[in-house]
Length: 136
Length: 136
Image (cartoon, rainbow over all chains, first blue to last red; front, top):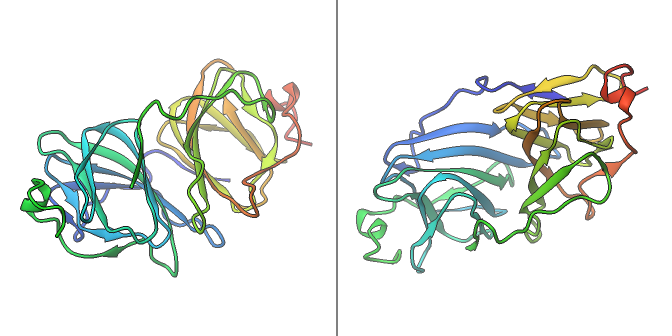
């Protein structure tokens, strides 16, 4: 048993793959093989969001605070709320983030394949975020 | 993208593998293969705890409320608090639950191997829970 006490895993600011102010709080980063699950809590300030991306083995979000948005490429933007559990299948191109006026925090859980948990495809533009295009 | 809205996954009461009053709130139960991660939130009333058990691919707990206890077979009981992240390696026999006087809630994240996420070894006795024996 290894206990990582609250406060022992410093918050981080991502340097790529996000737009706006985002904080990453690690939960599971180094569970040794054969375990492959990874998890972190992500807090998006209003208007902040991930880039477009996919996950090789899918991803689950558990929304824990605020009001968020999520979108699959080519589909409408959806609203996500605390307590919602969101599943993205492997390879589904999507983004998620805060709403324009209210921050959002979620726990993100994904599995690593060949050392990676995501592939990235560039920023969500302001027009895409505003829902004026559906990712095309 | 599948959104399971808050309230769409009913709370459950376990019928085995626990002592005391426990509530299970599903988070990830059916992510399709090749995904194998499973997750749920577990709330233990004071004195409640899991049976002794192991996980084939390990388990991570994220404590979200209250004051809890956790113990590996043959080792001392440890206190776990909100924000703590606890890792049990594959095959490590252990239990976790509330403290005697204060409830505890954690998110539990584990990976399924051959259709199972845990093997069970019987209740934690009152003497074991009181710390008068260390699982032997």
